Length: 131
Length: 123
Image (cartoon, rainbow over all chains, first blue to last red; front, side, top):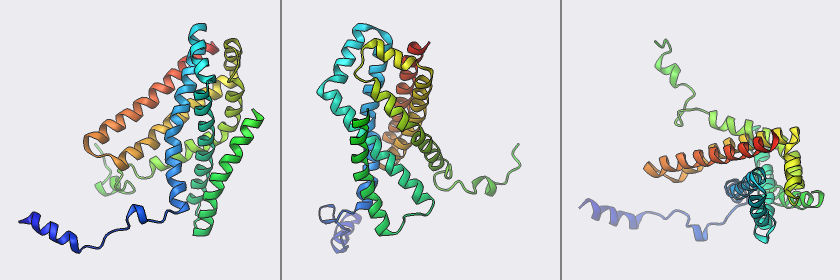
């Protein structure tokens, strides 16, 4: 009885914005990317720590870890991690700004989102060029 | 025996029960990482691609060793606390407990492994 009521009532309720037709915004995308980059960075951290451990232990072990590090896979992980770290870096600084009640206007917040995305690409390229 | 009143004990704690401690920790560790990372990224990046002797020599340098240790410890605490928030957002019940234990343990294992490698190289 209670179940039937719940089903008939559900039909009458207005639907909340559906994900497929929901217009994504710079502010939400840049926030979600912060979480994704923060977690994805673990791939680079694990590879880096494993490589360091191998260097500490022995020649044969380092040969294996260094081969992975210098392979296309290792380079992909390290380059991706570099971008992720710079993105997370800029987005984190943006949080500090927000905490200081700065940049909270919608236009400014959206602009800061673009600064994070484009800035992280620029910093990644710069780091690769310098290092 | 505690002399604080119940109200005083609860004030500022909020629904999270720990008030703004988590947020403040992320700010403090984040700023620390922001200061250390540009230099550390350069040192780490420069070490990649070397022979084992070159890599060991690079991380045996006191400045590089200490900075790497700091980056490891601070970043893994930053990850553990940040990831815990994601677990709390998406998981409930037993999955939440297991997730919280997992991210905290993963961070501890990585930090300890890195420190072991550093100590073995630097000492």
